[in-house]
Amino acid sequence: MDPRRSSLMFRHVLVVCRLAGRRCLLWTNHNEQRFISIQTKHPFTLLNPLLPCPAQSLKTAYRNLHSLQSYLQSRAFSLTLSQFKSKNHSSGDEYVDEVEGENEEDFIGDTEVEELFQQQVPTGIGEEDHRVFIVHPDVKWGQKKQYLTTAKLQMDEAIGLVNTLQNWSVVDKIILSTKTPEKKRIFGKGNFQLLTEKIRKTAGVTAVFMNVEQLSPMSEKDMQEAWGVKVFDRYSLVLHIFRRNARTKEAKLQISLAEIPLLKSRLKNEVANLDQQGGGSRYIMGSGETLYEVQQRLLKERELKIRSALQRLRKKRHLLRSHRKHKDFPVVSVMGYTNCGKTTLIKALTGDSGLQPKDQLFATLDVTVHGGQLPSHMTVLYVDTIGFLSQLPHQLIDSFSATLEDVAHSDLIVHVRDISHPETVNQKVNVLNVLKNLQIPEKLMNSIIEVHNKIDLFESYVSSEPEAVPISALKEMGLEALKQRVEEAVVKSTGKQTITLKVQLNSPQLGWLYKEATIQEVCDVGDDCTANVKVIISAAAYGRYRKLFQVT
Image: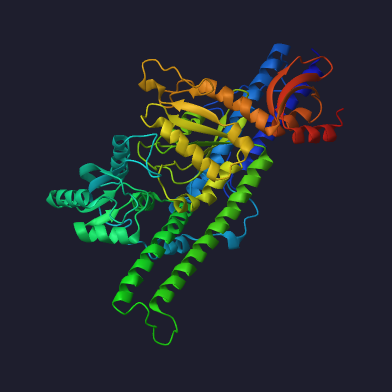
């Protein structure tokens, strides 16, 4: 081989490496740019252009360069997330990529969020620990009857919810049939009397968990008076779990918003009681407002402040999405019923050691983003989302719409199911219903990849649904097949194409392709300083490439 040509080509290899390294530095925080030491864990061999080298080494150099590019892309994304996490550790914000152009007026301080979070907390929410008596009404018929599950399985989930709370315990439980779930006491006179006697005879009970979607304020008051202890429904208990697990600004604001309807309903009931005593309708001296009107106004003002703060976070989230889109990274949202193994799966797909999955309900309350690679070396962003739960009021889900709207803007949804759970079919129906209520685009709904997780709990698992991908995230079984399915779906949804380009090695073409596309292979290096480069590239990027390098 001509030594001059060899030297030129090796210089090009190093130029591309410098471009990749510079690109990696651009990903890091402006005030904390760091160099990445590659030799320690990834000892890529970069050839010296001043030394003579055979043609075989030239191909080796391009192979190593290809591996280097893949490593730099994933490492750059991980660095960005970890730097931002470190910078904002005190506020609890984590796994958020930084965006240029964020206005100071969009910044929300920790003090402002904490004030909103601690103002007017509903009585009994997020406070003391409890020894709980669980009551499950087994509805025999009508609209409130659950047909895809059983009373025992619903009781098991109720026990799981209580046990999620640290220092809470279940002291006793009962399943009682009812034909009148819409009545104030839910049960008939006989069953309610039986229940009252059982609760009063059970030692150490400090709260009752009525396993229904939401009790009316009158029902809650009546039951508390009858039993002499605090009464929770699914709405208030889940709020309790959320309040204890909230770490980030967005989670705290969304939980505060979810509590507003509960505060409003309780206020109305409290004022009705005052009216009976002649106090609720009295005007406060000099204000021209009744006590009820003052409380309503204060609640409304707080709600407006919370929504305004969430809107600022939503604006930032929009900037983040624009940033990701500009970087041309496909986004894969991982959804599922709570505790189905979403976080464990993302950790297995990305190798992100910062993820610490927990075997509990609602361990994840925030959307977090994690970079991973597909078999073609394409970088994708996996979005971990809050888990779903059946029988929750719509306003609780609506309060998390700012977070869940990221799902509607993703390129693909992966629906993870705990296939070992006895209610797996019911859980699937609940998740799909929530997605439909979120107004997810039909194209995105039709392309969902369903994953059957926890197959390691079976001796031999055979899916009855041929399109589903069987895996064990914990044991890392079936992940390669899943990655292949994700890659095929992402390429289709993003309009990317796999093409082979003839590239001039004595021009910036190859460096540009490493930066703007996913290079799969560089081969057939010819004597005319050209090579055939196989790439995955979007239509927009290919258009820019053709225009920039005048390729026909």
